[in-house]
Image (cartoon, rainbow, N blue to C red):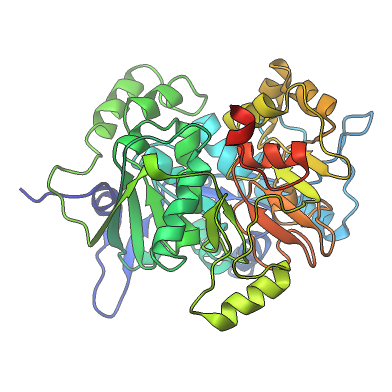
Length: 467
């Protein structure tokens, strides 16, 4: 019997035409996720070629990147002050109506970040192939789906054919042993993995995260891990489905119901990698040795333990440029470094469990003088539940801003920006130059570390506050 990995099982089940030496494979897509930024040109291409959407029922759309997160007006509407953003939002409404695609628009109680609403509504399911014109589509791999980002031309290709041309990636198993210590989160785990293998370590591979520390994670924590697989260069990240997965999906609006649920479970239970299946590369990490992590440079691989020092890199050109931008130097400790802004949100860390973590630390505390804190829920569903639990009151009473759902400060496309020269502790996924605003300086960290910095006004080891 041929022993296959999780990835190979999903890949084989979706091959329309196998790869050849001179041509990529033709690969079927189960679910196409669409947002307002990377889709306009794709729809225009369909119009130019007089093509329809091949399987519109296999696509869903929402607005998230360009949407403002400022509080709603008295009439319940959002004020969109950016002309380009308003145009993108209107165009998505037009495109979805014309091509028959289901849209969760502004005002819908199901609107939110595409990588948050897909799972919470039950669209994301084990064994599916999922694409989106967004790098962090790998989030959905937490369910045992093969999910990855695509370019605008490929968005048009999927709309027109429901297929993609793809070269088969290699396989990479990351086994995580032990258990995460107190104060160390899934965000710290994935940052530590990127530190270990590097920002190019996963290039050409699909990573499968395995081991007892992975099995112990909740679904929302697994999504955080898979979300940042692209930051290690991987094509996708996957975690085999198990009872944690099935419990999360059960009863969600778009998940199978009744007899269809039982049939789905049978298929999903066959997805995990066969015992003895071979991977092209394997790495083992001890979760129990990890500490809270924080980035110091201008890519997610420039990351150290919270009590570490900025290293002196062998790649002097990149290191010097990055540290000059960040205003740091080799040998410097980040602990105690003043910060100006804290952002809790993004498709990496804006789910209910992330907000609960941050609120657990901020409850009864006050944001440090001079620090601005934005808390942005990942969806309207998350926002509603957080408000039901009183988390919004905790944030507001502490002095933080409680916002509407959206990508917000992760990409600074919608008015939520870090000012030039300011330092931000952010729960997002990228710390590139200017990512959060022109001249912004970003430290990536977990919701716990971000909340600790909000209270102290400095980079802080959250374990000191958890004692």
